[in-house]
Image 1 (cartoon, chains in turn cyan, red):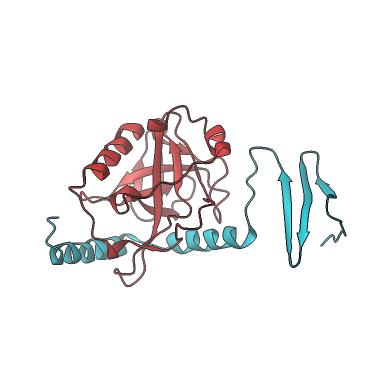
Image 2: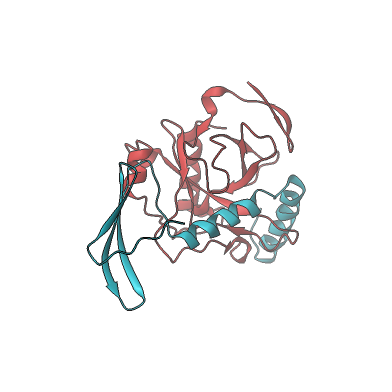
Length: 84
Length: 164
């Protein structure tokens, strides 16, 4: 991993089109500004990882499970008096 | 075109029905083309089947059927990337996770699949709004099929995607 030391107001450039600027340092928090091309998405790492894990879990759902859900659904709706 | 799938066998897909997801979705960045399939019987779940990998399919649902107050704000960069012209063209679906226990059914409201029905281009949008959970329990709120708003949204989906 490349490690660079930067002060508030300093930036780093990644390739031609990405600039990360340190906007503010306050206690344990750093505020970063990111300029990147519109076709690149930028996310907080932990959120991105959670979405990826959820997608991976979701991809394991199979047709049998869907049938089970339908039954569960009907049971609940009937309990609520909702016509399915 | 015919595509082999693990869950549905070989399916015949009209190429004009393919949804293009240029960046893939997190965890599946290499898969860019999907088709939306309805489940055999009439119920709110749809399948988002990857065209280029028969093993990968996601159960998706119209979130407005469950959560009428759901108002995901589509960021400007998404509007640009998908070339969204009108709000009516936007189709929002959320990915459902089904576990062994069917009552533990959750939907990812934090990262909806947003599709421009006009050009069939889509992406999974990670919302900045922290209020929307990644694991929203669907079966806590039984579906209100008579809910006028939800019915309207449902119609919007089939119109925008021109059936499936």
